[in-house]
Length: 234
Image 1: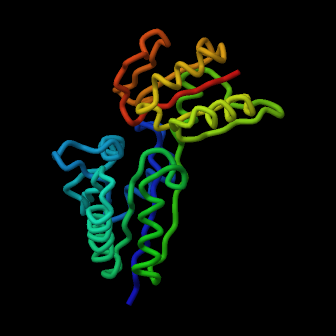
Image 2: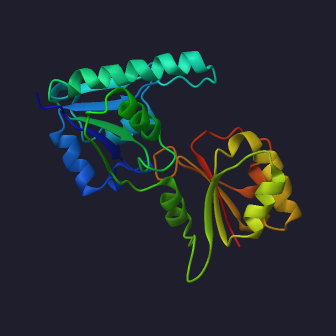
């Protein structure tokens, strides 16, 4: 029996034109396109990116729900169910492309899925197709080089540990913070204290048709979307 291949497919930061030629080919060739699906039925971010390239009438469209919760039992059940749905196609010899915004090997849903599939179905072949990350998209939209020459650059999730955030800022020339929404105001306090507010930039859903480039004076108290990046370039 020939088992299909699971492909982690990076589709870029938001603009459909920023997918790679290889990603485009995979979307055309793979019979099954899997994607994160929202509970309320609205399209996920990754699904919207590939809309212009995929005709649902010609593909098996496999929506998978990954609930935003910290309840371990709920998470385990949902992830296991998704893995089982994917394997149902793979065992029939059909390749499955799991699309994810950005790059599949950088802060993506695919990483956990890949680990789970290896545990549950170690016979499944897997590969990933690199994609342009939101970090790259943000730097280019803003016209800000993240690193040059011997510069040090960091890409990290923002946390409430301000001592650690300060250390990262002090020891790098360019820093990209993700998951910044929940700690936005305290991050702004820290950056103001470090006299870096003028060198701080925030972009939401970069390169997409919903992109927002924030002005620094608009940020305090703002409710940022999860898909927001903060760039600090010293």
